Length: 369
Ligand code: NAD
Image 1 (tube, rainbow, N blue to C red):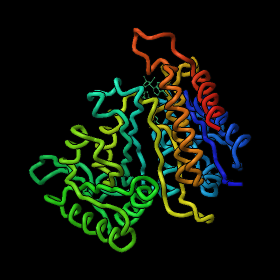
Image 2 (cartoon, rainbow, N blue to C red):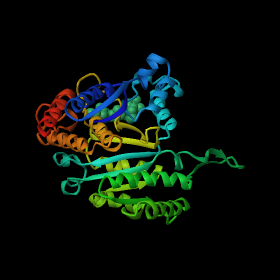
Image 3 (cartoon, rainbow, N blue to C red):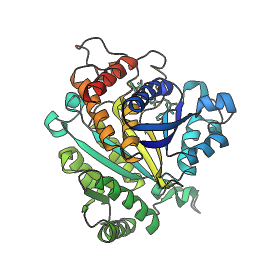
Image 4 (tube, rainbow, N blue to C red):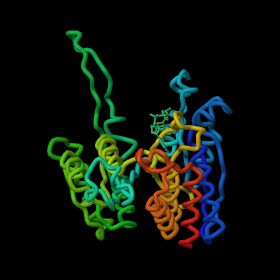
């Protein structure tokens, strides 16, 4: 019997709606497969502010530090727009990432065949696409010092940001990418700008060094990030895992995500160092926000959140077979034409509701079991 602990933070807006469906999927795995989760539930974001007057309470953070994985829905909403910056729902999410030191952000770009016509690229370029962007999340240009907008002696203003990476920061995200690749096809492409930036030179050296000394079985290539962006839209299927820094990863992961169509389809994971159980600290969440425009209407696509749970099965709980059957069930449902409104073109039939999509996924799980 496989076991693990899970902290479930539904959050705001459509967060609780899509998380309810994930909980039904979890229940199915617990009753039908040899796996059991020690689950706890808590509040984050606006929901936590309403209850605790803070977007993330210390008690919730302490719990988050103890569990094997956190599953988060989404945070935010217009009700909280006037709150002080430090109390905004998004601060709860950022505090979780920072306090748990989640430095490795995994953003898969997977194009289900049934949805290939939703991509801005030609169907044959994206159909069957399955790549993983590993973005360094805690350092680089967004955190480096010095930074700020300053004045020259003549009064003219100038702005400065610093791209900083220590060897250790590069090493740990490189290891994370190689470990992920070892669970996939074993291919990693590292992207930087070693042609014009010293940070890129060090990045390339350190990533190569980790591969040579610790992951000899991995096939590693290096590419300049601008060429990588071009290749991502030219022939994305040449890649499996891409590892890159915070700034380039921000751009490249958004670009890769749009190869696949809707925001309602995109899962993510953020990983850190090992916890007391020897598992990497981990938070799994859909890329989308709380979607206040559709919240409460049964319109939300639950697939991004369901695929985030699938990533937890694969990367935290070592349940590859369960993750595979869940991914395949989602694919089958899409192939059968069952979709929420965000995935329907006008000429198509009536959209399925959030829970109807989940009903169908569970039906496919039953058939695959
Ligand atoms: P959003 O992702 O919430 O919504 C953007 C658009 O995509 C909307 O039209 C929405 O209806 C649609 N959409 C998003 N998820 C969907 C789903 N699962 N199914 C169907 N349609 C979906 O982004 P936004 O509107 O810019 O932000 C709304 C709130 O969410 C803001 O408060 C923002 O700060 C917050 N936000 C939170 C997160 C997070 O929790 N990780 C991420 C982004 C935005």
